[in-house]
Image 1 (spheres, rainbow over the protein chains, first blue to last red):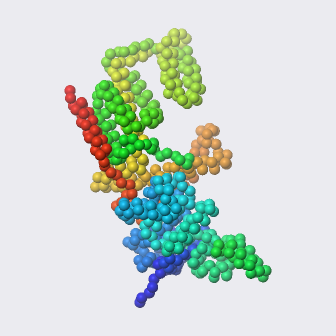
Image 2 (cartoon, helix red, strand yellow):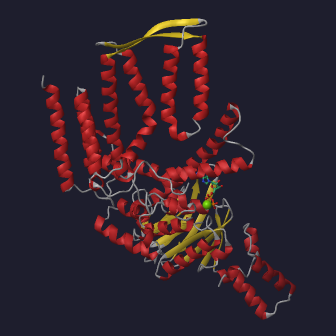
Image 3 (tube, each protein chain N blue to C red):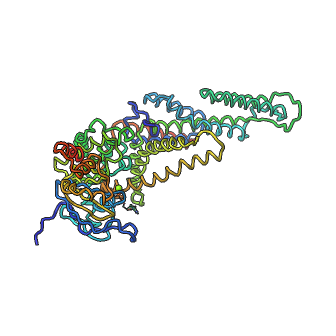
Length: 272
Length: 322
Ligand SMILES: Nc1ncnc2c1ncn2[C@@H]1O[C@H](COP(=O)(O)OP(=O)(O)O)[C@@H](O)[C@H]1O
Ligand SMILES: [Mg+2]
């Protein structure tokens, strides 16, 4: 049987921290190469757990994860982490290096990349995330957004095909957040596969597809256009709609929609 | 709190900055041992001059090194007094009868209060302390024996006491200056990397110097972050009425606990996150990795090594010769 596998294939994945309560329940999910997927879910719905399971930081109780044709196991975790990286929520808690340069180098050092190649790549990827002048700076001299960009550079330098952003913008101010999202969009345009974990619906709307998690299970998996046809899905998954979309639905329910108002509100709400 | 300096490193351009950290570490260790092989005041004095001379050549501000010595002032003073009072060999240099009585003790009290009051002018701290010492000595020695007297004794200083105390202090000064030069001219990261490289042979004994160096460099990296955090928590507690500067001891302890508990909780969370971040970037403890920092042994290192060997050999010869 010849079957075309997606870049990331998650089949019937379950996970528990303590054998008592399942935190992830029978998750099925596939992500194509070059896709941008958003994972939405309330606090504690299992988003971070899912991210850590994908790169083998946690071992599933049941089910399988396949990345680029390689089945995740203790033996293959190392190879899978070369293809999938994670940018975590707290910018301070993932900055390993004493300087920006050291931090970008960290992943490559672990892969035993020769020094000359490392220096070249550090320059290239620092430039790419707009941090070329900061190479010798220490993390205490950087903003949260800059630290997140350095984290991205460090992961890209490992020749990663896919990056999982686990609420990577949630601790940033609105400007840095917008900037970071712009960088991610650029990288995506160049072919990076993006898995954007968030509980911010506006941020999720930049994705090709939305996956909604509720209590550790996939509650919905669809395009934004389809999902927003039935806003009650968000409410049922304990997610807050952006104000503009709420107004849109209210007006629509009242039957008061003039077409230009509707499109304006929709644009506001969806960021498109 | 933003630009906190880790360690004592002060950027500069002198000779010492160009040395490989490994050369510096080994040199400093060998020179220290050499200094401990010396036996006479003349020898250690020459060694002190050589040290000063090297610092001048290396364009290291002696003021900076002296600043580094300041926290050790008490240790130096203690060593000095210990030797001078307890060493009772050689010729008797000074014998001064002393009385401890009611009035001299009162005098000491007044003197101490004065000293503490003046100690606010932080600039002259050391000088003030010396004045206080001299005052106490004068009170015990020269105040006429009036009023109740509790104890009469002879204050004696012997020749060997003076010699040994000067010898020990000069030796300590050299040792501390040497290590200060090392930390002043070497970045903490280079220092740990030098150590790592030097400890590499221990790998056969099961000590992994690579991981050890990583642990130290990560600790160094997180010191400013943690201090920053302590500051934030203190501000948060202060806004709820805590005062970290005043209050009784019990209050103070309570406030410190209110600072430590959140800091510990945050530190645990942080270390978990950091472990995840490192593992997700394919860090495997004990696995060989390439390094972005490279150490290189150059001409200056060779010269320094030869100098060190000569000094060390010289110290051994001096020691062995009758
Ligand atoms: N290290 C852990 N040990 C035990 N339970 C955990 C641990 N981490 C998370 N959990 C629990 O797993 C559930 C999902 O957490 P998480 O994946 O962090 O959710 P999210 O990222 O969506 O907020 C929560 O109920 C949380 O309490
Ligand atoms: Mg989370």
